[in-house]
Image 1 (cartoon, protein in one colour):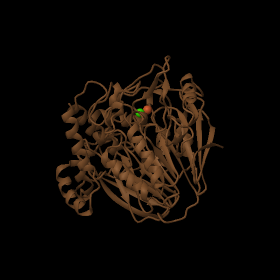
Image 2: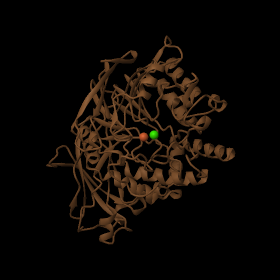
Image 3: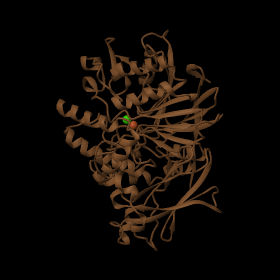
Image 4: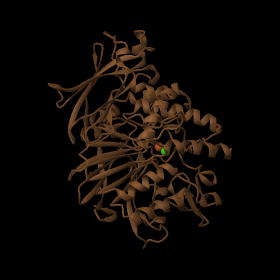
Length: 533
Ligand code: FE
Ligand code: CA
């Protein structure tokens, strides 16, 4: 078991090392032979079949865009399998047209193109449009045969070197389909944001709870067909589609896109590492198929590097992290536990060596005003005490990896990364916290700020305060806010101030609930730590 673990890590770190341009070029050739998926974007659309008439709408999963840069954005859609089956085209590579314009009426088509939709990728399509203007709103749509898709709004990032003075985005996570309706997305969509960030648990691999308001199909999902069907169910939601059509998204995954609390190749339950890696390859492929992202360079089988950096003018640099694919197995049997020797092992990692090197070097050189780590699990310590006063550590979050957390916080402090802000999902509750150099010493330096956003639906309606939350607030003085309703966080940035607004819903078990701001926190530039506004 241990040997397998090491082999897999070696394999991953090889694929993870930042490649030189020469390596990249020579790797590209090998990859396109080795990977059916890697070869596809280069597929000539002229070889693809052109459909003239479809009996039904194939765009029932909506449209999306994502990963904007100053001059490019990825456009996405996916053709519904049922419609293709009806016309006997489900095994064919098909031509899909896209159009992009500056106005919603498409009075002048600025760009257009044809993409090959392949059955190998479930007829999903990703068009990377380049040569666009920075900080500009565009509208896009897709055509196949006689059918046109819904219209999507997207926006490029501000130019990398511009002194931009305002940027606003929302971040969200954890949208268990059975636990509630996506009303939060309905509200988010009308905000016409610059960006929407998803921190993971976009789908859930299985059911839990007993107050389910709608059903997703089947038992726990394990293979590619299962994962595709699950994404299809989630993406059929019109509120989710509205949010995707309203702004570009930046997405990362957490655990439930594969398996609850998996760690690298270690499954939650009794799957062997080989089984989990094969499952992970299917899950990661489905993630790519359904998300508006560029094909990750270095993808091979179960290895799919999605950590990346996006820049939004001089105002914000966003480091999108992956704390699942490379992590050491949770210590002491996972859950909330007293520390054990494995927990103290300084060689354990949450980020993996390659991602960590990449992150640290970026944190040492970034010149943006706000430096975001968009990631999954809570970084501020969230320890509790049992009835005998023994300290309990939540082993799945950064508390379970104390050495690496300390190293990261000390790095931020030492290299002087400007205004680090950590954004987090995963735990289905809102939190605001100071990131301390020493969480055991309230007088130690605050090196950054953390905003944890609650779930879109996971956990059902929720409550403002719980005994659990109150106990954790009392035991962790660096944590300033807790709320366990559903919703999302809106962030508004200026060169002087970061504002986080915690938007919550009265309920998610019925559709159409209104939304309100439960709390506002700010960070002043140059002064790390969260302040109630
Ligand atoms: Fe979750
Ligand atoms: Ca999670």
